[in-house]
Length: 183
Image (cartoon, rainbow, N blue to C red):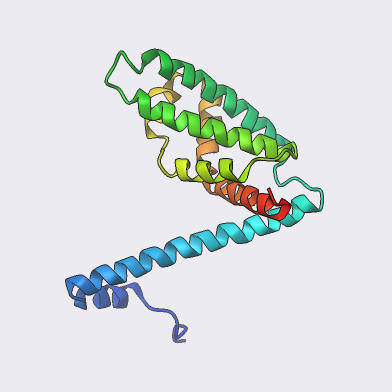
């Protein structure tokens, strides 16, 4: 049985890419990059639209268990924030980067808690947060704060970090809710 006509084997694609000159390869790479971003955005917005419909029907897309986990993560992040504040001026370790990540994730947890409690989050707050979360990463936090946490706390933080995509969808849900409610 022959492969589907739209299926392009990777070796054929690699052969195509190596046949391109430098400018064409950059254009092709740029095209693939923007397609990937567009598909990612489309997938998140599709899920966010479904969550928005559920919210408007009176159902929360955030379970009580997730709500409790966000509260717990928030407490762990606040511990890390206090630690960063104490140590950031006395060492060359990346406490400033860890503190930036912590602040961003504290804001995110607060927004998700508000979403579960059916409280509004301003459109401006969500947009600024989405921009900020692209500027931070958990590496410094994981290096400096995570080892000091209890094993069950570390597990919860790692689980929180692995659900980044789910939280991205929730951020888009907040955007759609604000648009739907005219906020």
